[in-house]
Image 1 (cartoon, rainbow, N blue to C red):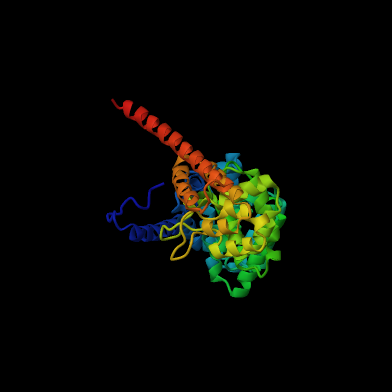
Image 2: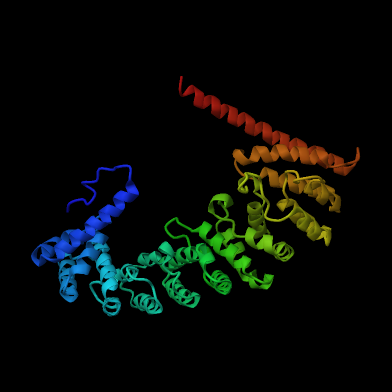
Length: 454
């Protein structure tokens, strides 16, 4: 098929060229509709898996000029049957047809889509074809019927999240569709999470009441569904999950409303203990920032292994920066110290695993100094800080943390000849020994790389 861009001379004017190509393609479609023999011959090319995007506009042009939609759909089904495999065909042209017919006759198009829901040949394209028209409550119900019949592959339903396609339907309709989708196993759950994230992404376009309802649904979804076990083809959607948790926490009114989500988040981190929160999503920070005392009390009582995974993630301030490039923390210094002060003997070691190691913005003592003053067992507090530094990850993060730790530990006031002074000196030596080992290894690696270029 001839490329509608072929005659474009203004190569730099891409937006203008795109519009002109669309107009040309629609005109081409109208001309094609007037020659039934040629259109029938062209259908295999128009439905080919390699069909180009502007085939949508060709389809619209055909729809706006055709006089017999039922006959054309019958011919399309013949092409599908002749191919023997609809997965090797492209619905783009039919999408354009449905769009054009909807412009001419909405009622006729709605009835056509109703027949396609359970059509053995075209049912697998229903989710795509439905979005050729603005989605209504009837359209949402049609999507649910298609899900129940199972003719379309589940990955097609990820198109629900494209271009605010669900913006025109209620949160209740979205809830029903996504619950149905999530019930279809890992593929369905994966698609549902992806779509829900896109709905949340555009939630500002909804009313405050709708946003609250959507936040409630996010919390219920994340509490009810087994998303922590989802590891779908290596794409875990961690960032998307974090955004759902953040939205659900933002629109919550109490810790009780997010506690189920927190439980799931802790479980997820125990299943997948190796990841970088800055790039794949931190599941816990949104809840900790909103409900610091309650969340800390919960974390204080979880299994030791789970607790360490969780706190290691939350403490990685080197990998978490705000828009200005400054390091951030999942909890304010004052909130952490106030929580710890209520029961230092039980809480100070957890605080040591979580507190920021860099100085506080503005005047005042570092949070590590304030926690040290609260610690009943100051040697245990210093040892916990050291252990945190020694297990903080690769050299990219570890060396800056270790260097900061030596400064922090050396700043603590201890009396000569006391166990606390001995612990302080031992921990600083441990850290300096680790720094020396890393620097030696990095120097050897650097020399090895240089030698390869000689």
